[in-house]
Image (cartoon, rainbow, N blue to C red):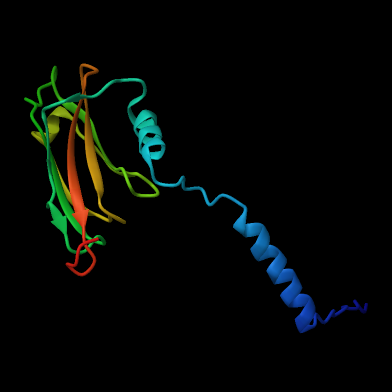
Length: 157
């Protein structure tokens, strides 16, 4: 049995025409991330906490006022809670309002956690607000907000 294989040669001109057509089409397709702005982070927050209205308080968000390198901005979040079986923090969601994907992280807690506290690093694309939202076991939602100025090499930005 002889299977014949047909080989088609694509010349450079046909290849470039096809590639440019694909590039033009890709320019008009969404990439999955919304442009940064109020609607993007508010949509992300609504997806995380539903229709609950956060109240200022109980959430301590630790961030530097000025971040010389937006690629690795250290942060901490602490929530004032007794962390008992009847009163504890269920989750803390962190949002960066100016990032293309505003939800940075979600920390989940139980009464066994002992305290609602976490530390990490995040990437900030530009100067913006960072918001931490704590969901409590009783359904209440608390919020803390800090503004971070991101500089480029320590030279304003």
